[in-house]
View (cartoon, rainbow, N blue to C red):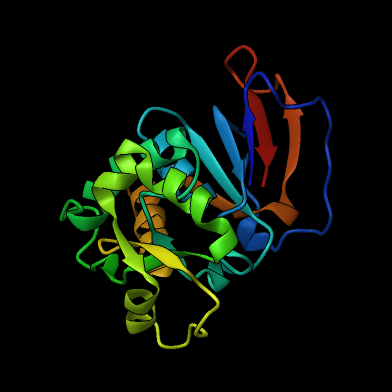
Length: 213
């Protein structure tokens, strides 16, 4: 995903293929261009379109064709550094209880996950589990308890585990489609990026950018 704003777009133009006649329109000025309509681009474009003129560009025929379409996403509030974990916790309510105007399809389902440790990794696992926000969201399991949760674990390979019982699986496709729907409802425009030309300072507002689509 790439974000282009009125002040960051280089003064270049490019085009790859000629657009079908049905896709040709007059020049339009946007505040923000988001390149890539996967889950990240769709979410960003939807949020920005509340207050800005946004165009969302995707090189494939369908959004989510690459990484988003192959994602098996997990909501876990204990993964990543402290900032990432805080951001994850802040998004939980939106995923669990989305606004009816945003979607009528559940995004998440119970999953649960474990962080496992070999005997030589016990010190690191204990340090991980001692962090206040992680400790509050997890429980410590010995080797037998971990193997009971996941019988595929090889006996003798792990010494302990930290379990996050409230982890969730995320339906990435449903979430992406909800953001794309919100984006369109708020007046956002989307176009195949291979049919776009860009230039700086060509719109009616100072510093804007235009695209011939």
